[in-house]
Amino acid sequence: MAGSINRIEQDIATLEEAIAKLAQEFHQAYEVYVMTLSQGVRQQLILASYHLCTQTYPEAFLQLSVSERQKLQQGLRHLAQQIQLALCQSLQTPVAFEVGNLETEEEEEHCSQDDEEIQGELETPLAVSPSPQPLTPERLLAWQDQIETGMIQLLNRLSKDANLLLQRFGLLPKKLPEAVLEVASKAEASSEAVAGPPNLLQIMIETEDDEDSQTSMVTRLTAIHLRLGEIEFADATVMARRHQLRHLSGQLSSIRRDYQKKLREKAVVQAESAWRASWYED
Image (tube, rainbow, N blue to C red; front, side, top):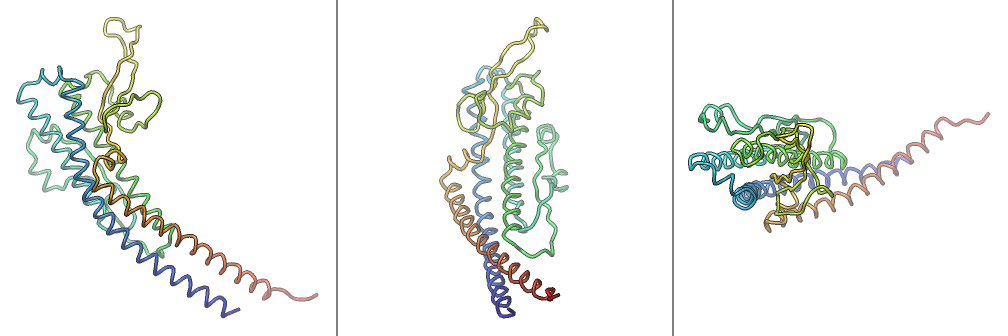
């Protein structure tokens, strides 16, 4: 019995070493992925904004002065820099994350007044705290899920801030409630959404008629909605890094099955031993 337990525990220890090694590979792979993704996000934000300003709402863009156009473009570049900074800092250590502020105090001190007017309030799960718990497949999966969820939250927040910026400069309707932009930034493909260019969402919304408050009208709205899948699809380098992550995920699934099997075997052997230890004949 002792031999069986020792053998099983040795197998578990071997699997835990494999999990630790895989965790390092995951972290390194995510570092490269996030670096390439941050560049892809910037490019896709600018491309989506260009299409919206020149193809969807060209009249509104032409009504802006040269100075206003430059401020709008500057604001978009600033938001892109923020998302790049947030993504690149999101993998400082491979443990659990919590929400933190994007900009450092030093960066805030160097912001010009114009930058402050257009800067967004992107948040990202950055700060980490060490944990003494043993590294298991479930913990590694939870860590990966937090990273993926955090990236999507960042893209949603960037989409919302970009739409607010466009609204501020008159590209999107001024009377449009911020809640609508919030929904647009998080919306998934549905029957209400209209197919269009990448990272742009076309939706039909019901608004109040300016001339008759009792009458509502349906308006088509095109807004920025950055999607992780579309960013990966548009950039071969980002897609290649995603394939590497999927390969590691496959390895983790295999190790997880073996690990759970060994834990089950250990529990069975211990339960059998406990039964025999407590059993006695009347």
